[in-house]
Length: 237
Ligand SMILES: Cc1cc2nc3c(=O)[nH]c(=O)nc-3n(C[C@H](O)[C@H](O)[C@H](O)COP(=O)(O)O)c2cc1C
Image (cartoon, rainbow, N blue to C red; front, side, top):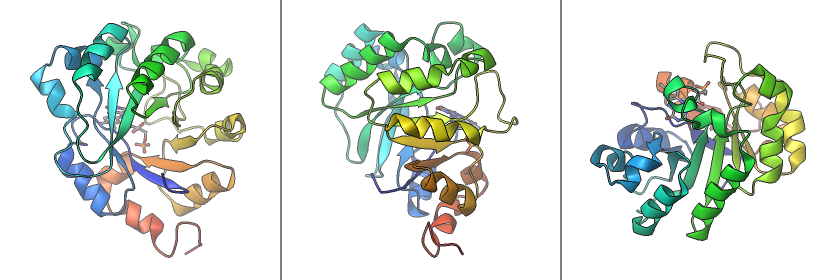
């Protein structure tokens, strides 16, 4: 990982191999697949397996959603990394009702022992394992700082913090104020949510954040990565 990493966010129906390659060519340091259900991968479901393919050696994390350890083992026993594969990322951010109702996505943020088990299982196969999380399932969990408990207690390789709770829509502003306390965990933290400008990236770097993950702004303009890097990421243009 670079001193400060610029990542393309996983976005279902958008971040397939072509868009990941485009953003990599335009300066993204790493990219993420769309989320793939662990249960589908265990069953060797064709369309789910398609989602985790890395056809060209573009630096890519594979994002997983699920919690069943038996299924996870079934999948990992047969998994052969392709060139470009950087590790797995566990989705603890998805807030869509069909995931939350079955205890997945952001419903897992407070289930620390379960998350530990998932991350440990991936690491037991010698693959890096990171987490992408929201601040909680709702504002009450956010107030209780469930995200801090999780980050403190789980030994993931890094944590991408999407600074919203699970009830907020992407139209609600991301809450940058949480990062100051999160960096005190001394874990590797990547910020996500509403990041568009060099000033934001410089602020995040100054407080100890190790990277920025960019989603919708890259859909609008994939040049954003190179634009942010122009004249040096941390030299004011
Ligand atoms: C169309 C769309 C699809 C998304 N799919 C995923 C996904 O598969 N996995 C995930 O972790 N986040 C997903 N997200 C959330 C983004 O990764 C990101 O957290 C969110 O857009 C906030 O970042 P931004 O403000 O830079 O867009 C999706 C977002 C959008 C807009």
